[in-house]
Length: 176
Image 1 (cartoon, rainbow, N blue to C red):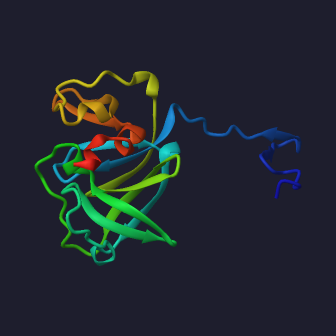
Image 2 (image 1 turned 45 degrees about the vertical axis):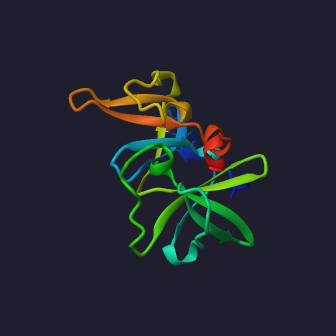
């Protein structure tokens, strides 16, 4: 394909090639999603190892573990802990595990991998980090894990909050 002379070019009416203008993206690529309370968050795509949907039956509960953890999951021979992200961030709404599949975002820092169970994935979006604002009106339980927020709708006071995956993985809350 790259050896093809028409790759990234288009012939105009005179037959001479013109480079096609590639669509330029503003900002950085992020994964947008919801936790059970309906709050919307984003994670930088570069910090995500993978996104999977798993049956709740595949998550093995671990007795006497932190209440923030749903259990462990085996991903291609690697065992990872799975957390209810909403509960971790201090939301009162618990994740509904009585369904066919649970979306899980696997994040990694150094050799530590953690699965974040969420309610719903919105999709990938290019977000301008230059427009990131300092978080406002955030609960103390959530503040250490936020890098900032984007105002989505001023009338409804709706925000998209950017999470720091390294701060989540390195949190002392996992020891509780």
